[in-house]
Amino acid sequence: MNSMETQQNKYDVNSLSDMLPEDFRKYGYRLVDWITNYLKDAESYPVLSRIKPGEVKEKIPSSPPFNPESFEEILKDFDKIIVPGITHWNHPGFMAYFNSTASSPGILAELLISALNLNGMLWKTSPSSTELEQVTLNWFRQMLSLPENFWGIIYDTASVSSMHAIAAARENANIQTREKGLAGRNDIGRLRLYCSEQAHSSIDKAALTLGIGLEGIRKIPVDKEFKMIPQKLSEAISEDRKNGWLPFCTVATVGTTSTTSVDPVKEIAGTCSREKIWLHVDAAHAGVTALLPEMRNIFNGIERADSLVVNPHKWMFVPIDLSVLFTKHPGILKRAFSLSAEYLKTELDSEVENYMDYGIQLGRRFRSLKLWFVIRYFGVEGIQNILREHLRLGKLFAGWIDEHPNFERMAPTPFSTVCFRANPGNTNEKTLDDLNEKLMNKVNETGKLFITHTKLNGKFVIRLVVSGIRTKEIHVRNAWELIQKTYQQIK
Ligand SMILES: *Cc1c(COP(=O)(O)O)cnc(C)c1O
Image (cartoon, rainbow, N blue to C red; front, side, top):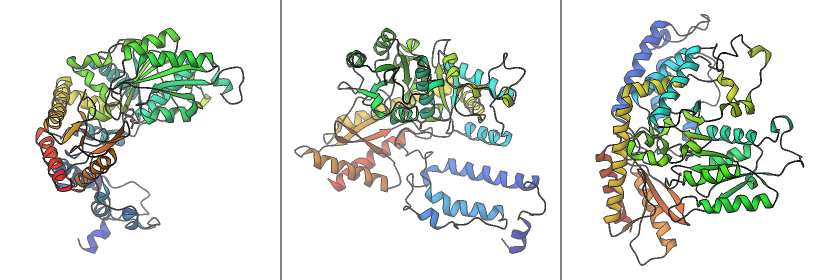
């Protein structure tokens, strides 16, 4: 590109306007082309970014440009500086954590969401946003075979959904936290929240945020399959009541983060309703598998839960972020959060739902649009077929681990997350931990596969998760080949 052209493409600071429409069109097409190639060739990138800490920052000036820069230059630097520092969640070899992959209809919806740039705080501030959220969440509720009295709302992440559920549980305890807060009170016992030892750290964070504190969480032991032991929950609640605590909420997990174990929701619900405490179910990752008739049993007893979180942005291919909280008690959630500032009152408040009343944030993105695009584009059947294939591939991989004399599975595989380790036998746990950590790191260095680990009963365990929309049988086969080959090199 010659300098004349570059010059022409620069923003005219005297125009006091946005980018010219013809430039938007030109760069818009360029970016769509870029995205098309990126998604098509996602595999050609190293899945895990290879850069060192500070490397991205080093390449970017530490003060902002005073003069406009051409869009060409910005795009060039995006390729040169930003892309190498990307870990590719869209890569078919991304089998770490719980994946979230962006499907194409979801990506295109995001383009419209940012173009419309509406703020759906009130029905009036864009009726389509509120009404599409109501409709798509009613669809999603039916897709998961949840009862009709489950009302839904979209938040950004499961952490925030669970925080709101626990705030509603606190409101439900009827201790006037709205007015009095929690600090310095001797008219009530200290609040106690229950979850299993395997619950996600977002529950701890909710307790930090809501003034419950880490001491206010009691972690209930799990059985050999990493599921909460309901008997232990009942015992803990009774003991706490005797000691002056105020039990107010239990969080059960369907698909825990380490092993995807499923807490016995039905039994836990029995205890919670006897004890009159709120039951929140965290099914952020695995909940979407209830789309499959053969998996519906994961939600046995769900009709007795007070709230439930499922993330379409994880295993339903909606670009991050989109988390759904369902609750049977929207009125309680609203009581916990609604405040009507004069400047937000409208003449329609008695007729319509204003989602700002159900949470800490006022402004809200038009997230339901991407859920609508994704559900319509794939159809329920299309999504079911992909989920079913992922479950099959997870079990296929688990079978290979079971058959191999030098590998072992470390937890059941109820979904498509496989917990395993290499174990050549006749060595101690410390050596095994080191060996498996080395195996994982060596595999990740190849850039072909990204897997992560957890600790189970103190042991280092590798996790492999099949849940990316671009992950096919060949990728799972290649992953297994690579793991075996790497093991041979380092054992
Ligand atoms: C992923 C996950 C979370 C956290 O999800 P965010 O949307 O990233 O906040 C919480 N709980 C479970 C069980 C999860 O799998």
